[in-house]
Amino acid sequence: MQLPVYLDYAATTPVDPRVAEIMAGCLTRDGVYANPASVAHAPGRAAHETVERARAEVAASIGADPGDLVWTSGATEADNLAVLGAARHGRGGGAHVLTGRIEHKAVLDACGQLEREGFAVTRLLPGPGGRYDPGQIEESLREGTRLVSIMHVNNETGVVQDVAAIARACRERGVLFHSDAAQSAGRLALDVEALGVDLMSFSAHKVYGPKGIGALYVRRAARRRLEPLLFGGGQELGLRAGTLPTHQIAGMGAAFALAAVELDTENLRLAGLRERLWAPVRELGGVLLNGDAAHSVPGILNLSFAGVEGESLLHALRDLAVSTGSACTTADSEPSYVLRALGRDGTLARSSVRFSFGRFTSREEIDFAARRVCAAVSRLRALSPLRGADAAG
Image (cartoon, rainbow, N blue to C red; front, side, top):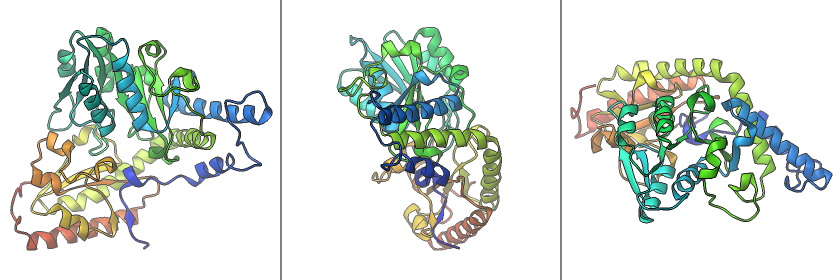
């Protein structure tokens, strides 16, 4: 078996070969290589048609109108455009933004920037299972609240929020609602109309497309309440200037179309892989499942191992590509802020591992990983001064 075994698909998702082939057709002199904004000539029109075909593919997979999608460089930029753009529109006193403590750094850091600009920001604490109470969010709205931003699926735990209920509460108060759906695309059936969101962020590489391309869904009624971050060409409804990367956009369209077709069968397969890993590992005892298992996507399993030092565990599992949290926080030596918000102490948060499975994960790899985890944890517990600490599973 070739090593390492990739069980960190949330951060190491490869481009699907079928997607790569479509992208390659946009990168050569014989392909669709022109600037898609240059519609005065045939090569430009061909590129424009490729971009719009991809826009339609992504829109169809999320139940949106193609005209409501704005291309970005990824979900991070889409989050920033949604949070900063909505908050800064119609500047005035008393402006307020509501979010949660377990959001992606792209949202949390954008909210931190708003605070430096004089905005008020409320960060809600979720329940121990990692879900927010929509009633708590509704009660936290106030005069001057311009935006609520709550992610759909948490990138560390896989927990799914009741986005539709939150959106209804916001709509009743006239407050814009944004949700980061980078982790839900390809894992959940999405319909932005049924969910009722005003703004929703997506990234291509989470669904086996290329890195460096994403999109922000902007409900038509929300356009007038959003300010752009970039200026210089008027592209994308005037909300995101810059020459569009045709090859990346074509890849994103193909990736979303494939994910929509394979959604049901893939979710069933991933649920089986998740249980195949979890069943033998939980027999170790002292293993805590992080997040509400009844409201989670099947491709993520986040576990805390009592009595084991986290850095030693990762070293022992070096033939597995796994992580202790989000790829966006790997430079931070502090324990996961997501797990701390769920009530895990620093020791348990540091001894946590996120396993995420993908389209190319096999049962043989899961079985190999289960054996390696069980052996490593048993050996480290026998050696560790933490032995017996927090042993309740």
